[in-house]
Length: 99
Image (cartoon, rainbow, N blue to C red):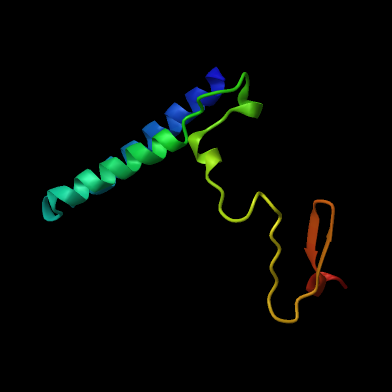
């Protein structure tokens, strides 16, 4: 868990530094509310990705794990027009590349 949190801290530090360096030159032209909104968004995303539970990195839990994109963690498979999709277990390949 310590390694997971150190990795999280390093990622937050690097992304915060990159955002800071990108915003400093244009901050005087932006409104104060834009800079505050950007800071709030960065802090909220960092909090959502903080590993808060689990004994090791393989079962670290984050607040973002509670939000699902669609469905109930079902596999979603989409294909374009006239696409033949074959799936066996975890193998997903398009029929167009079979030759």
